Structure formats: C-alpha cells, structure tokens
Image (tube, rainbow, N blue to C red):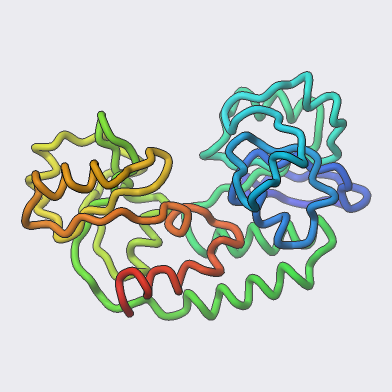
Length: 255
C-alpha cells in the first residue's frame, strides 16, 4: 500500500511496520503515546520522553549524525524523520536502504496532518484521530493578546525564532506578536534586540538550556521587558506534547 509523507514522497509499505526507528524526539514521544513502544527499536540520544526510554531502546546517534552500522543491525522496516531536524545527507543515505517517512512542520495544521498520517501508516488510526480531534478543539480559539515578544533559542550568539517556524505559530496562538520578521532562526546582536523594544523576552529551555543566571542577565540589560524562562517543548514539540500546550500557555501567561 502506498503512503505519502509530508515531502510528498510515496512509500510502498505492504503491512504496518513492526521495527521502527525514530529520529525526532517529539515524534518518538508521539509513537509511545499512540501505544507503539514495542514496535520502536531505535531512537536518538535526544529522545528524552518518556523518562527511561533510552535505557530500553537502542541509541542510533543524534538527530544530525547516525551510527549507520547500528541502524543496519536493527533492520528497521520504517524510519521516521523530519525535514528541519534531520540532516539531508544522512537521511538520503537511510533512504537508499530503508523506507523513510518524513514530516515537514511549521504549523498546527501540519502537526495534525502528521499525526493522522502516521496513525494510518502504523495502523493506530483510532487513537491518532482522538489526538487530532482534541488538538483541533484546543487550538480552535487563540488566547487573548499579551504583547510583543522575542523568543531566544540560543545564547552567544543570540539566535531567535522568526517567521516560518512552528515556534512563531505557538507564540501567535498564545497571544504574542513576534517582533522578529526574518524567516527561520536569525542571529541578532544585543543592539538589534534593544531596537525592537520587546514587551516580553522568552528564554527557551531548548536547544540552548537557558537558566536563572541568563534570565538575570537579560532582565538587567532589558529592564523595560518582562524576561521569563519558558518550556521550549510546548513551543516546539509538534507531536502529542501539544495535548498539554494550551494548559501550559494559560497557566504561564493567562487566558
């Protein structure tokens, strides 16, 4: 049977895969929540949810570099990756040997499509449909406006989330206007950040692990902004972690 991934690639898969490798932490968590833990044989070192998973599954490397000899030993009948999070060269090498299903996500709509398609491919359509319907309800009505913001994903150099990112959509949904108009993840200087005059500065827990000392630094340098540490997983994980996103946003920032 043919299945189409989010890069519009057709994969011919005769029966539901039983030996899956996931190269994306948020999609790994989704597979577990869909009840597919026994069929998951390989994960990355960054697949931290659920706790303890990496002790029971084979680590095939990171999200960018893979131990191909380990992948070969696992004999996967499906590899699941993502256009942004995984390196093209390694993915193409995997595609030459194994069925590889790729996601491409910058919006909630893309996330819902990914969840639905993987549910169909992996024969857990009923559960995936439950997730999709819940998320449609959760994200139907955006939260009230909070103010302008800048969302930092890296320190030294300062990198921020811009347009055409999933983070930007989460910021908009939770009531913030992202002042960064460049696409993707531009590097900005402290002076450029000052010129934006953000009402809020958000320091993400990932990929750079901003801590209290960073909060104090930015608060001292941007006294007119409200600086806060935020859980990056709720802004950038586009699998089943989204089921808790609305509650996180309302508890953290209010309705």
